[in-house]
Image (tube, rainbow, N blue to C red; front, side):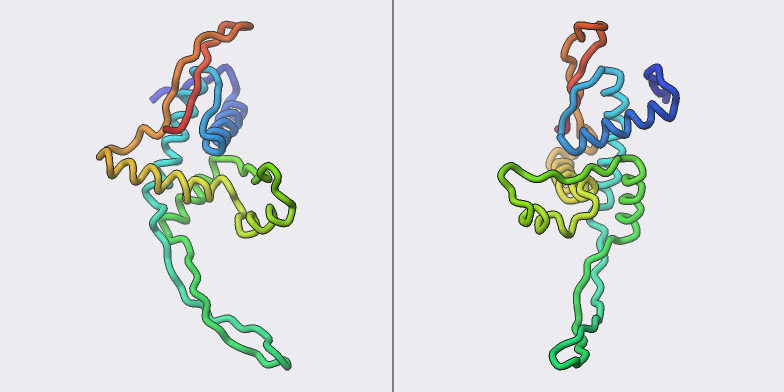
Length: 173
């Protein structure tokens, strides 16, 4: 299938699309030109499909760890750890190669300590959002409607005043 070149060299075009896909998945909607929106839609659909097909693949392991207790005594304890399975790990790495890592921002009226506590265990917020929010949501939607795909919609918004480029709004459904 042919790809729109968007009047840019390949490296610039791919950087532009990666940035717009990352913003779309982080914010849920972006406004851009129609041709860019259609290219972003292709990439976003593939990312979401990879996440949906693999988000349930987890492996539980019991690890034995040691800690120094009172009076210098070494104590062993067991900890149950949930790791990504092979399919989910491969999908996570594939998605991390496409989207940019967007840092978490503090919410309104959130103190620095509560922000640090909320984000302490999250290394890649956008990837976690894709696997923990979007994948279960769209998987349930696929079960309910009996169809896969169609995670994004592109709405035409008219023409830009300066250069008459056709604008579009792309959003997650």
